[in-house]
Image: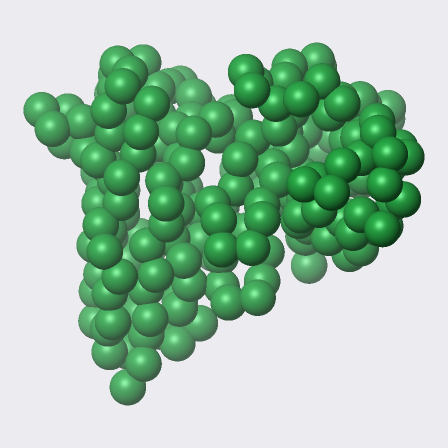
Length: 108
Length: 119
């Protein structure tokens, strides 16, 4: 099992807001980065650090952190946001990188 | 920024595989490369990182001792070699641009290389 825990699946109605969470002790000391992966495609970075959205990523994607939990929020989810989302950060030793198990987002 | 990986491989158990990741569009020595794999139907697994600046590496414990990551700065290409292949090494292997001093954020990814281990 991963040191970063994500809900396996989440659903959201079109146009509504959804929060995808990632829990792990290391998140008390390190920020999470978030990756979106659609079927048959490589992952892409959608948010990282305290408040960093890569160029080209819609501003409906935002991130936050509190205690041992990091969150990715999609405000006004669109059909094209349906994908697997992975959080990523350091492991409990701080030396290595670890991914969460992933959350499958369904847009209804 | 582009990362272009080598083609699919089929290997026998116990063999080795070497995957390449040719980069362009940025200064190679100012970034590192992380390697990530994804078994069929499974999540992402970080395998390790190599600095494009000085060749320092950081391997995941799960593959330590079986993996070697190298770079060729003259061709701005990174390589991942995995030895003593097992069936559970069957996966898509991705390279991704990362921090130069330590693994940080993977901001550009290669297209992936499917490695199949089968007898």
